[in-house]
Length: 509
Image (tube, rainbow, N blue to C red; front, side, top):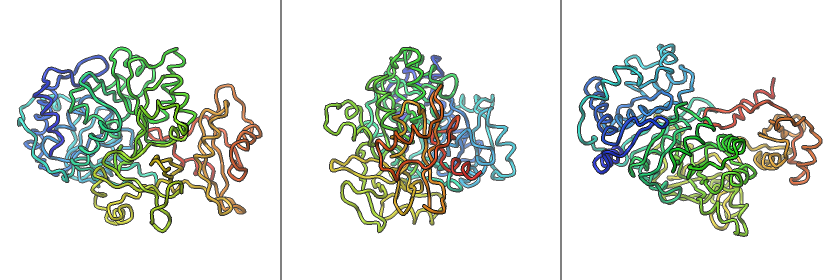
């Protein structure tokens, strides 16, 4: 099935329901949303020669037009390539070329970056700004009443990984994958109602944008902040005024939102659900978030290769404070989502029993079709249907998955594995520490040593001895950092993930 059929169905059932909003301002009801998508699809076919299976890029900051274009692409049976709007123009151009995009939708704040990289783009690729009169004429045209039929294994979404270890890889997500992800959302993450306001404060090009599908099917509101991004005060204001707000947020965004709520003496009124994921949420941070804002939180763990769908820790499990292993579960990423299996394997690729640490593998109907034009990566990552995530973790006897680290981030010191997250969790419980990232740095005697890159709270002073004593009170001596580096901020990508590769490079200078 074509995932755009969900929009067509909702437009028939709830034509007058509010669909697209910028801040508090209504941009389109569902009838208008679907009509625009259909018109865009027709224009893609008529004016740009787009046929089912062709790729169309989206290189734009968050806006309601983004969703119109996305569904227009699906409507004609084409494949969307959402591109992080904060990438350099040459990086975006490489993705367009690798994906073979025939057209890329841009916004006025990204068009220049792509134009400067013109020599790196596919020779025949066209661009069209969502902010232009030509775009408005396109969406105001006529289209077909129904989307082009597609099969469950037909490609829908070509997502390019962040590329921290080299060129990004194109993850092939099918219509069936998107349906499986959406049904997991409703079964394992959160319910959805027509009164919901799905808020896109994180990039639509990434996980936040994938969670619009169940809300389109149910007929909820889709809200892009006026800032087009994440501003904690704006989010709190929108929550209070719109009510029933649901949003995806990286852990760093949650931390900033909690800090803003504390400063304002608020608890996030009107925000029903905050789904967090995309990076490690430390136990100290989620406990503080719950204490400050109440039980509004759900955690998911996934990758681009199995988007948002490997495990989930539901609101109910966040609330079960009387469970004897509550804190262990809160520190986990939950249990396998409904369409997924999860296992832990050793270095020999064989499954390990509960409690043992190894590589996390996942299998199910949400796992990607494979990587775009990359058979080598497919062979390395997909084994008998199992996705090798590259993450290290363990399952307990009840099926709860606790992550240690990415396999490439494990520190081997004196022949012993040290998981940076263990060190980070302890340091974050110190009142002077605001953020921390532990990395391995080459050492002639130990192979690697643990270096803690620390961001202190306002007014706190660097004190290695104090942090050392704090670590020694909780973890083995060999795990404690051999060195502390104090920074004003940790380097992060556009999704809030700490860039350990950059920290390692900083240590070499």
